[in-house]
Image (cartoon, rainbow, N blue to C red):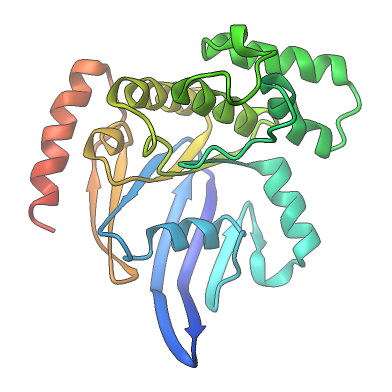
Length: 251
C-alpha cells in the first residue's frame, strides 16, 4: 500500500510575546493510500495544528513531512500551493465559499484555478458530484439560500473536484445538527470507499467511528491509537461508537 504522507519528528513552535509555545512535539505518523484516519483529543492539544502543518498550510519548525515523495523542506511556497491545489482537498467547520458565486460556481473554482481547459468536462464532473451527494437542485442557489448540511456537502464536492489523493477535514460536522452530521459522515465514508484517503480532526466519537483508525492527541503528541477497521454499515457505526467511547475513557 502506497504511503501518501510520512511524518518524522514533526515539531511546531509558535512564539508569542517572546514566549515559546511548543504545539507539536516530535510527532511520527503515516497515512496510506485509501486510509480514513481521525484525530481526537482535548482542545489545545495540537490536532488542528497537526492537520494544517502536514497539509502544507503551515510550515514545520522541525522534522520532516513528505507528501507523495516530496519533502516540504525541499519545495518552495509556489510548489507547495500547486501540490495542495492538485493533490489535496479541504473541508472545514466554517464553510468558506464566495458569497457572490452560486453553489455550482463555488464548486468549479478549484478546477478553474488548476487551469483545466476543458470547462465543459469539468462542469459535467461537478454536476455528477452534486447529483451523487444529493444537492443538484441547489446548483444555482446562493450560499445563503441552502441549509448547513447542503452547504457542507457542496464543500465536499468542491474538495473533490480535482480528484485529490487525500482529503483533509477539520471538524466538518461541528456546525451541523445530528441528522446533517450523519449525512456528511456517510458521504465521507463513501468517498473513502472510492479510494480517497481522509485525515479528519473531530471532537465527535460518532463521527470518528466512521474512520478506520483513531489517533488521540495530548499536549502535542500522539498519546494513543485505536484500530477500528473499515466501516461495514450503519449498525456497525453504533457499535464502533460504543467501542471508541470506551477506549476514550482510558485516555
